[in-house]
Image (cartoon, rainbow, N blue to C red; front, side, top):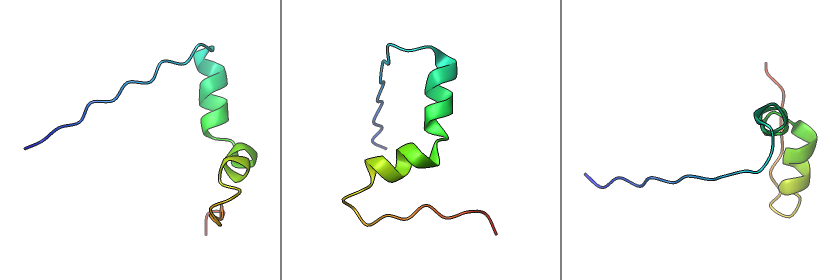
Length: 42
């Protein structure tokens, strides 16, 4: 089985990274040209 291991180093406090990972506004901005749509839970 093939495995791919990817590490990304981010020069920022873990709390900031976590908050941005959950940000709908940031997701919408980053996906602006892809026609993706963030939707809420049921």
